Image (cartoon, rainbow, N blue to C red; front, top):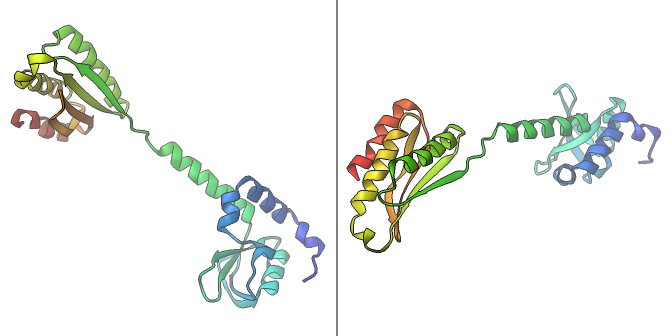
Length: 207
């Protein structure tokens, strides 16, 4: 079909702009003359079924509406196309993606490191760090590292972890019960509702 001036209509120009800015979108969709099948099933701009048309007829219908013909279901027989403002469609999709990313909470695992019999004041500072991180939505790994013969008294470290878990039980739940990794005993805590925290906070007492 011979190209005509309507090909340079504003919606098509906008469409080209977004395709240029979004190579992924270009790979995902075939638009207008990029649709290489003889006939397609067409959904109109208002959602009406226009039936099966020759692709050149479908493109003409889109031009007359100053919109784009977009292949939305390439694996159908025949492929399904929709008449729409493709540039606006990509813009709205990108906007939703950006909003979804903003809504996602990036959860990091922070860590506080202690030793068996760490003095109470120093441990208090560390626990306050853990509290601040949990309130920010992060998980916290509490580790106690043993040296030399300290390995003979794991119950000391376990008691420290129990006390820390209890002190944070109003805002956190235990996600990984106390366990040994080499010469280190650790527990992992994460944000939790207060009603659930007390129930989970009892776990160290049974470890």
